[in-house]
Length: 456
View 1 (tube, rainbow, N blue to C red):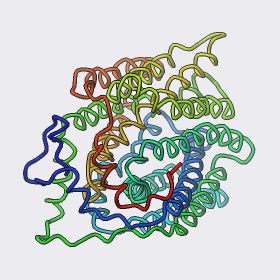
View 2 (tube, rainbow, N blue to C red):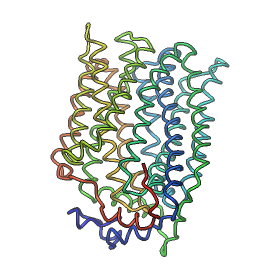
View 3 (cartoon, rainbow, N blue to C red):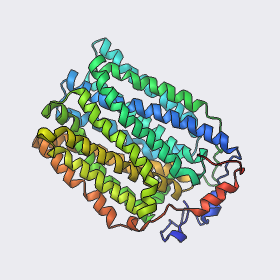
View 4 (cartoon, one colour):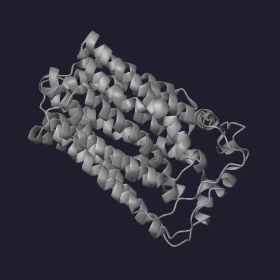
């Protein structure tokens, strides 16, 4: 963990007594030409793009398969989303400890390949008329488990390819890929579901995972070998150290707690949202896909506005504003109706796309800038454990509320309660954060690289 005396935030004493510069100086960067780093980052960027694109198709196709082919009800849809999110609280912390001890590139490749195998099982079972809800539960749980491992490795791997000076720029590009996937994935997914059927649409995600594994395998930048600790720690000690690194810094703690509150109710609403669109509003798969695509198109704008927003109002306020506006967009959804139904739904998704992207880019970068590489996987895993673990509870809650209250009242309640998250952030130290941490980080890492070009 890196001390932040210059930031006015507390660092757990037992973790480290080094200065910011000393901690990063211990994380030796391979002295590679910046052009090679750029080329390798672009391979990771491409792998991310096709992987999240396929994931967006599957996120629509598997629930639609459950609704249209297997007749899933609100409780079963909640369970489907619960099984998808359950791996995050179960495995994130262990994955973080493991990935702080091993090289991350081979892990990402293996995770993508095994995900492809699981995804290919869905159209195969459908072709044999053997597809069941139980199989979908198993597939989403397995894919979720591998996604936990892959994504923790991915977020911890990015600073190994680019210097921290370029993290906002690099994260903006990666988030733009997520946005592009959100723009094209659901729309294409909706069309493919109508043309091919939901199970066979999942093929696209399997193929995308194969392509992602191939792209990552071609990255040539070596990862720095992890030095063995002089006094080996147990897994539990490493988990506790990672959680301290996450929660003992006030601004990071505010991000985590606010995210948990926000995700709890957003996930509850999202677990029944697709059922609401298909069942109550009687929208076609293609229309549903286009509605979700609006978020992706808007998120690309959000990626472009992230840096200017922080420069104008500060990093912390940009994150908080993003969460407030994202929540407002979700609250609009259950009030859409009549001739304004589609414009209101599209407008809500535009709000969510723009502002959730601004918030996500800065909270990602803040977390990456706040810790050194030897803690990065554990801190990322701790964040995902807390936030996505809460999402698991929220998904189950959404299924229960949708069953007992009805879909529309449940969406209204969840949308209103989600404001608790950004309100907590507004009252926390996060509101005082104006810039990303670590000018010293830039100086240390730039000194370790040959001055022969900028990452752009």
